[in-house]
Figure (cartoon, helix red, strand yellow):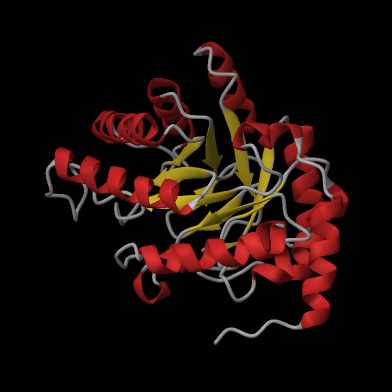
Length: 289
């Protein structure tokens, strides 16, 4: 049985009741949307690839329908199985495959949807979003550089926004990871996470994504609060949110991207478990209402 401190529950509910929906999140229809992550299977040409595109598409659509039926407010697709990731760009085979799969998901569930293409293939993600009719992308390296396991990821906001305008995709929002997980930030150790969030706002990003240090780890509450103080942009939590810790964060965040919590054993590579999805949404509903 899950146990939640009564005091923290009351505090969270009070904050939830007074928070207005950020304008950038209005397409979701709720103040704090829950966005289900779809980890698309290994794509053509990648080391683990081999499954047919139709099979990958069918699985992604099945997962999206589980999310829709459980009451989630949106979906997001990511090429998580394409390890090891290319740095800063991918080939046309990945763009084409992700566009086909993303369009099928969007058509199947008619929910707001986003996409991320690893690693830091932000231009390609924008192209996929435009072709598939998606609503946002999740971008790495938008402001400030960091060192990922793929190598040095440079800030790309200037080029990305000009590319977005060039392809007439300005309706596609850019949600920027800050102090990104699975990365070293020693080269910006003198720049706090709040200042990084403010830089995203200055560079015309649409939302900031705050994570823990690795996939499945929650953000530090003090980091979330620092970001909240530093920017007027929506603050979306992008890792480690579970039914057990949701009450700690719901009063501080504007949205949640949830993946590992919905998978068997709480592991991102596991099969989607509809029971875990429903349990999480039951907890969400008890806090949000």
